[in-house]
Length: 629
Image (cartoon, rainbow, N blue to C red):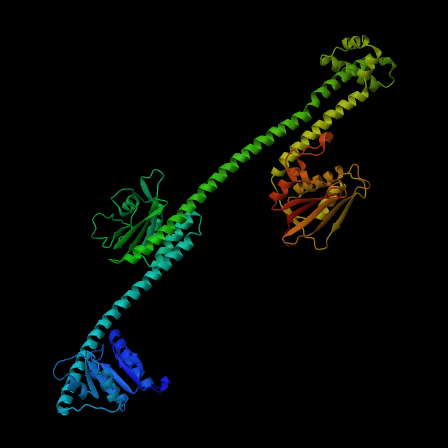
């Protein structure tokens, strides 16, 4: 036995049976290199690639007989012997194999002589065929018959493939249409879910459905609050506008497709709308031939129904129904979102109204409390002043007229007596009352200083009440916006405040624009800010107030800053200073309405105001106002 396998003869065995190949492999493996193929096509290719020394062919192969394979191999490898191995025992089987070009024929089952026969075929054994022409003609006839059979099979397969191709084309067309419908439905759903205003959403939806799907009409019905009616809220085209204008509605019952879709929560389809007696006939839509009603449902709760109508018979396929139902689900979600948003807006409006009433009530109560506190000293001061005036009148009436040199003075004294009597003041009784008093008591009662003090108290209280009134009413005054030079207006405001010279300094940028504001209200704003800065620095050495103006980083606004070198405003109260009636001045006269009014006025002008302050480093109020065009 040679040591190098490459020197062994190569035997190719083409056989579709695994068991037969295994048997031949065991019998020949010691002396030959056995190549294997399970079908004739692979065998032909392997033979061409390997150029074996001997080819063994099973006669019964798929797609091609052993004789046909032998003819092909003989043409490819004319010098290679080919042996047919067959279990065919019919007369002429061996002869037909030899006529096809085989060098030999071995019958199955394979016996002990198999290896010996293989050796002989490799050494050149060729079996003789008698009457070769006769068998060759028979073999050719067999080939012709098989060829005709193959042609018939191919023709049949071609027809089947043609039919399958047509079916595939229809399927691809259906899939493409389904994809287009689903894509359109998704696009419609995406577009409508971004709209949160209900009426706009409904109008937009019916327009998109008709334009994207090329339908004759589309409309959306929503269930009424009593759940008895389906009310048309949006319709496509002129018919839709007429129906919505007439408040078109249908009862939620089984007498209309819309009603049934809502009740059954399932799509309703009429492929022949004219011939369907149970369908509601709509005079506004005479050209409808097919109709579909799709329920609009969210979380198992029906909101209404979507109607889609076509002027073509049998216009809706299963794909249409599927894609439109997907779209209807998206539309239902969008409608539900819009309704929730509307309810939320209503709830927010109600909350805002309630909070506004609460704020007004609170502010009114606090205003009344403040006014009451400031008005409380007035009656006592007036009462004391009235008593002081009685005593002074009594003293004046006691004067000796003859001692008065000026006639006008004498007449004035006489007038005082007469008016006092006319007012029911008994001057003699007052004098008698005064005479009974101790000297120190009498001296205290007729003090001019006391009288002036009471008048000052009444005056200060009245002024405070007027300031409260101005703080409350000022921001609500009707505005008369105009182009205003803030530099000139603020300079005039400071000049009229009577502050010491040099306290306020100005720094105006050259490109500072004019503001578009109400001049009177702006005077109140900057008067309050500058006044607050001045009153915050009673203990500050060399108090200074700085007013700077420039164009804001947004060129449509002008920015003015009022700052000081005072003690600053503590962090913990910086948010509270804007609240009405909050004041840090205690009993020194502050109403707590100044900054509240300032913020309201600035915001009403479309501007903003904010504070920057650090303890011990002063305070800076920034006012941002719209610039004049």
